[in-house]
Image (cartoon, rainbow, N blue to C red; front, side):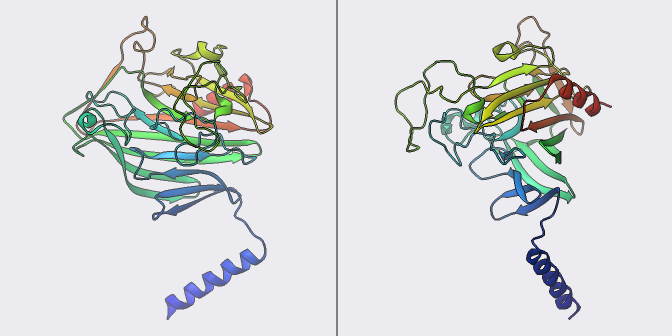
Amino acid sequence: MKTFFKVLVLCIIAVFIAACGGTKKGISIVPSETERKIDVLYDGQLFTSYFYPVGIEKPVLYPIYTAQGTVVTRGYPYDPRPFERFDHLHQVGSWFNFGDVNGIDFWNNNTERPAERRWMYGAIRHRNVVSIEGATLVIEADWVDHTETAMLKEESTFNFSGSGDWRIIERITKLTALLDTVTFTDNKEGMIAIRVAREFEEPDGRPALYLDANLNRMETRGVYDEGKNGVFRNSNGLEKGAVWGQPANWVSLSAEKDGEKISMAIIDHKNNPGYPANSHARGYGLFSTNNMGSKTLVDDYPFFQLQLKRGESTTFKHLIVVKSNGFVTDAELNKMFDDFNK
């Protein structure tokens, strides 16, 4: 009987809030196991979702919106848009993985890989929601090989925040070895990344494969640069293609989309292995920062390798920043880097 009255009271409160037009202010996190996602709302509007569908070989944050409600991630394959590229099926939303863990590629895996090559690829399996407290989501996942043998235990903490024109995701990823030895070997395919909407691509005049106006895959390559205006910039003042492979405290990507001036940035942390991270940012729409890619990106750089024995852990910390209503400045990102590293 007590349970009945408790539920009744909660229902009355919920109805009262709805009737008054009340919306929870700030961040709220709403899980949906049936949809295999956890929505992150800001003032009741979708900011992003922690998304772990069967069709992706890793959990992702997808989609990601600005404070003004403009989507900054590529829609394909879940919400395709006309004249988007349909390359790199594995690049969805924002993710964290790496291209060489004991020789296994966790970066390039997708469901279109032929069965005879599955042994080359690993997958990251969402296992459990550890906690949801306020604006913080903590999850557990396993990094598994093609036999589903777990190589690494992942515990990732997402701290979501924002105010005004800013939306911020702090991701803290702890990886613990489940095998006698787990080795991360210098590889360009990594680590924390975002596949961005076509407006954030660099116009290059090069033919590529796109979806047509009816969302069908084109069979021949074409040039569709209209609307593309993305510009990469790093903390050392390098821009566009010059940022690729270079180490930096942060890398930003700015573009105008639907009349809105938007910047994204990935900010590194000094305690991360491989700091400062090298950039794996590509003009076709891949925005990635790689703490464990060095010589494979720039031949003159030292070879990188990180080895964990069973039970040992390593932790990476990054900030993803999304600013609307005007492009971000170097001074703003330098301050955020300093604050993040205090």
